[in-house]
Image (cartoon, rainbow, N blue to C red; front, side, top):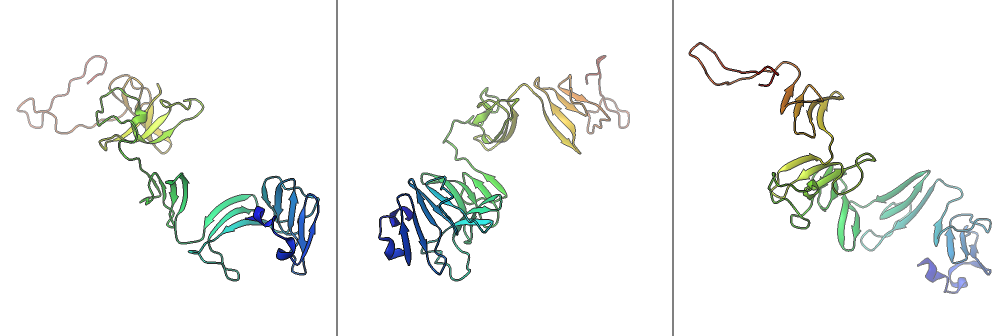
Amino acid sequence: MVIALLSISCMALMPICMQAQNQIQCSSPGNCNGWLYHKNKIGIGFDWSEAYVPRTTLHLHEFNSINTYLNITNQTTGFPVGNQTIGMFIGMTGNKATITNFQNDNLVLATGTTERLVITPEGNSGIGISTPQNVLHIHKPIGIINNINGDENKSTLATNIYGIQITNNTTGTGQSSGLLIGLAANGNARMVQQGQQSISLGTNNVDMFTINSLGNIGIGTTNPTAKLHTNGTVRMENLTVATQATNARVLLIDAQGNV
């Protein structure tokens, strides 16, 4: 719209108009001053002068305020009256960049006609879903990408799970890198370490439960050497009755400490 204005008579738009080879500038008692056209770039802002050259095709800058915003409204939002704040605002407050929908509706990022990221007025964020039901709701329709069809024993890349992939400089960024958290095609929840490292659960910033790359499970140890390796007191209930003695149960341990 701004570029189109340049082809219209300046006198029809501005009380006073000055046109030079590389600029269009307006001024009036109402402080209309603020347009600058330079080498196919347009700068808009209060007190803009020839000393400042627009950096992009459209450059907004306020010389006397920390707030610079582009306001977008339509027939549904209505046109702002007085100091009313409605519609969409894109801009800067100090060093903070913001995108704000002042209507009671979603803020959406899309590709083509498909909504990819949705933030609701309640603060819920949805990826792959336009009606997120929680603070972060991730959804992937079954059948859009390859899946493991519920076969948990099938040898296949864990990326076929729908969910979150987390990587860093150590893991790399490939399809088979890092940690995956999500759902298999049959709805089973899965958490998979795709590398040769361990995966741990902990409390109070201490690892309490560890599974290493050999499939050994450690409780109270981060270096399990057996399928189940515990470090600490173990309590067992409902063991098999072996004798007629009251409350007698059987538990066998070999010389290496294996149960």
